[in-house]
Length: 341
Image (cartoon, rainbow, N blue to C red):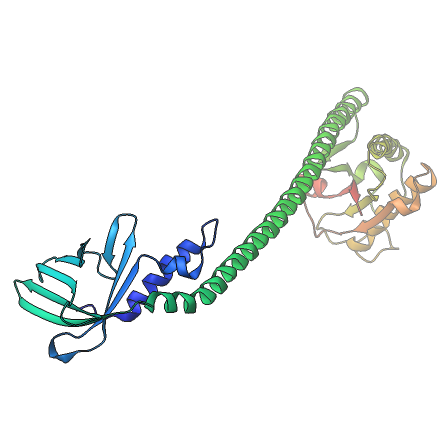
């Protein structure tokens, strides 16, 4: 019974540590007050079994065994044991032997007598030995607390900087988004005006071109005679109209955007023969016609050469795949489009 000295010692240490944490640190002597220790012999001749009584705010207790009720008497201590060792124990000074105490137990399990020796210096010696370690542990706990606080503050500042940076980026993105929306709205307005101009030209002047996606499409019959790459007067007039429209668009393009006018020549799939002995096939013819349009835009309409490009596709990019005269006529065309380089 009550043989776990390590548990008792740790419990005393915790009690002392709690006392040290108070505002005022008492002396070792003061700390050892209210602690009475005995070393006893028990049944089976077990020796040096510790019994340590501690006085707390709610009275005395036998440390390590909270279920045992302890009462201080004039001559010593009285203990009430719970089940399964239910019974009464008494610590009294043995009047027949100086300096000796006896412990008597009577309960359901029988009776027991022990001879005990009071350890007047036990608490004092134990307390004095534990205090330096407890103080060091307390210092270590305080240092650990300070380190944890410093780490927490550092992480807090890092998080705040991250939040501030994200907010700045968010504000920049909002500004860019608003600017983009503004440009898109302006672009839509310009597109609407442009389409109105196109429709007016087509209605008032019977224009010979049409729009296909973002390209101006002119039938080669409007621009050239059969097998020729020489522009006719009607074709030049149509190109003048398209150049004016493209010029209006170019004025609205931001300076940082590098744009170019692509002129693409296309033919039908009928094999080239009989006309234009200077060209071997439809591919060469389509390239020559595109180049003829580019030279007119550059030489006669003063569009800078670095803003023009001529491309020939022959019969390999038809709009209409059918083998009909109408499809062939649709596919024989010049496409002019303004794009970013």
